Image (cartoon, rainbow, N blue to C red; front, side, top):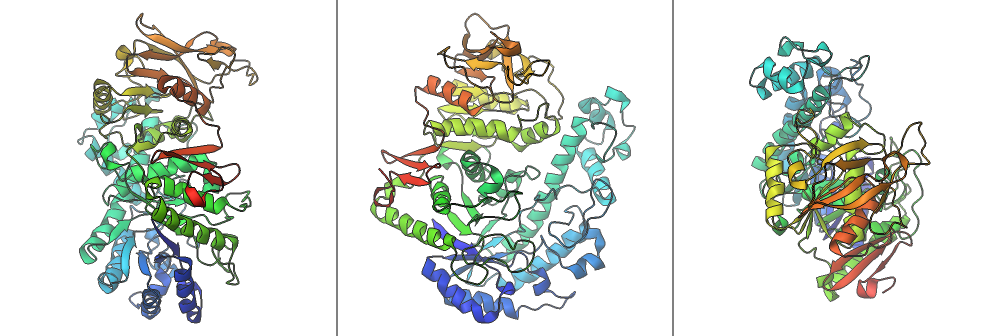
Length: 638
């Protein structure tokens, strides 16, 4: 594992740079990310480039023995450019062009924006592409963040219509048929009649909304690919990545990470929720880099953390305090999940701008913040374990795969049905349950090879395609236990309900079909009396979370493993197994953990413990006490 930091030399006096570099080396850092927000310093006016400061900054870092990650500055075009070419700015659903003064206010569909991005990246690569200190390039910064992926400009509108025409082979009849536009008399006479989903009286057709999300994600991926091609040609042999904040769903991380084979994520636990959410995002970041057809031999993929939260942040609303030991624990969680490189954000807290309350390794006045000590301790501990017990660190091949695809996330974003059964909530519950059993989990794409896994989890695998069914069938034929979760195999790729029993494509194999799918509460709305789940012990009913599915037409050779208790669905089957295929109709982590525990004969650990089986030992992270066990001399307890 390598360690680094995000640094903004343009924000600090040059006389400070050499001392900063020396302190970074003292801390044990190797990598420094710079430049991703510095376009106005690179080019204060069109064609007037000022790189003397950047030359000096890179040389200062290199002379101290540090390597540089250079960012392309395309997330923050300068004011002069926005004024000169306002068409680079995105337009909101209200039809108003977004103002400059923040970041991510550009439209990736805009040809003007792409031209300007290619121009500045070409200049940077021409000057620094062969610099020996440049170890990696960051392409853009957090695309999709701040609801920035979609644009409602006329240019985007025309591009969307052209995209749809290509997708449906130029046939508007094919689109109307696929989308079911006869509903509410919305049949389109031509592609020129397809509007962007602007606010309307009630909801738009889900097919239109999902298509618009997919289109916007592709536009962002294409814009990144254009930059990536310039860097690849002019600076070969360096790592390439685009850092994502995976709390968002507007950008498909696989479209971004798969071309480079390296996932990259910014980890801000306070923005994600809890340790389960962080664990899932870490595994998703690695899995986003997996190629089609890869299986457990790929070890779940590669990932870097490019921004690791070092203390309180400024943007979550409540912005809670960070107690002693928390930063160290977050870093150990990343290490145990197989992250290759970790950079803290940031070196010194900003004195100006929108992030003044964002913590850093140094305080605003340049003195060492509490995060410095925790980072230093973690680095020492990591090197000690590497030297004395290296078998405790490598992540082994996972026995469990969790199938994750962004199309499913878009489907449930567009058709939520209830408030607390989103795609992220459903997949995180299944992932957390497997982690409670001490199982490593590969978060894999829908086109992965599943045949090498012992267990395949498919929560909210919403979209039915022939390829998905074939891959699940192949896993079953190879002897895997396949567990379909709630909201799985319901609609086709256009967000239209399948014309067969649910779970679509596998109902006959399961020997049952889904009947009720939705809220566990009845009417009149009484949150105190929802249906619960009973498994092997009727004395221990389990909460089902925000979603429950009951099954009917259960075949004689299928086994009902769990039923609803109480509420409107009392007595109905919720968990059914037939051969290696299981359908679990409850959404909660508790239900997933108990069902997995029964099927795999493993006992779930308490919720606050995260356990890793490494080298014949159990490494334990206690997220309640912020302590570590099982790592030898660096442990707080054993």
